Amino acid sequence: MKLKSVGLAAVVLLLFGLAVTLAGEQKIDAETEAWLRQFKLGPYQEPTLYELALAEGEVTIYSYSSRVHKFAATFEARYPGIKVNAFDMDSGEILTKVLAEQRAGRFSADVIYLKDPAAVVAELYEPGYVFNYIPPDIKHLIPPQYQEPLLVHHISLDVFIYNTEVYDTTPITNIWDVTRPEWRGKFLMPDPLVTTEYIEVLATIVQNADAMAAAYEEAFGSPLVLSPGVENAGYEWIKRMLGNGAVIVRSTDDVSNAVGAPGQAAPPVGLTAFSRLRDKEKNPQLAFDVAYGMGPVLGVEHQVVVAVVNRAPHPHAAKLLIQWMMGDDHGGWGYEPYFVFGNWPTRIDVSPPPRAPSLSDLAYWNTDADFVWDNYAKIVDFWTLNR
Image (tube, rainbow, N blue to C red; front, top):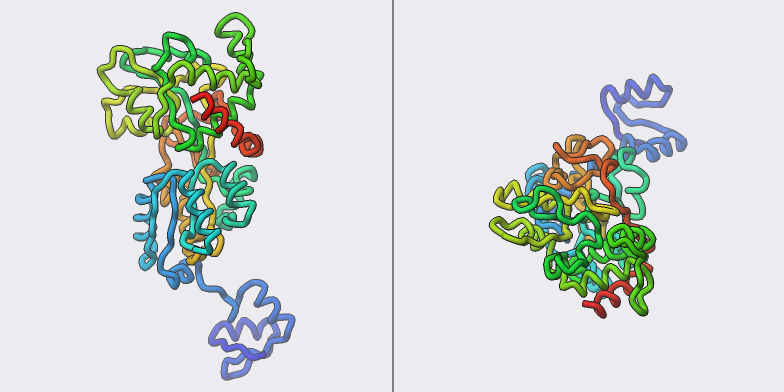
């Protein structure tokens, strides 16, 4: 085989004993050609990911977060010539939309970015509708548990909050407090049928039934007696919480805005995303904080995952966008909109945002994706029956 080469490259190859003509043509044997092909050198050198993405010209992402528009803008500025088509919708809507498109053979999305990984893995990953992609240059910086089956972009917590204008410290210290008569109609949480990460929260409470039973006895001084037909203390908490007039709203910011609104005589408490604390920077009148003194835990972990969609029309641009989203070692680039109090990066070289507590210092429950999915329908049915 003859390969074109010029100048110093020819001299270097001569030093290695390869035949090079005066005209600059290299004569290489099959073994050397295989080596060049393996390590993508010489004529087999690949275009950069940006060059490949630039040829595609655009990338489409379905995102659970409106902040997609922020990192889309910085991506377009960093990589001129690649347009980001960003769609902001709930995680459940993303799942439903991708399922419908894949089953119909309409391949529109390149990247999905959403919560509720248990449903994503079962409904999209296992059937082959989405695939994992970990940027090679940061793979060694992501702990194994956040690499598979899908790349985890960041971790957050769903936590109990209270109004700090009225209360100096949290008025609720036990998860069962929200079932007491004095909190009737004064506990808010997002609708898990709309904001599906809260099915994960409920499933995790159910999974930790023994701790829930112990917490009940600590709160009331006597063992928990389950209602007829109720399986365990986790389900009993759901039943009693709903029976105590819990206010079910659409989103996490509905909770934080209601709990933190100033000028209330008897404000409610709520369950919402830890990262909603960032809202106080935009609206300093909001007065709420995390109920750090809650037992047995202050909240439940949830993960946000990112994946490439099957038959993505712009696969190289999809990979480049995910690389951008994972950010740099200071929480910058495309990760910057999520480098906020209440989110924790999965990259080990990125410290949490200023003033953020370490996850190791907080009492919370991890979600178990297998348990969540195995009990998903059962929990939805129980919720619907008792709502």
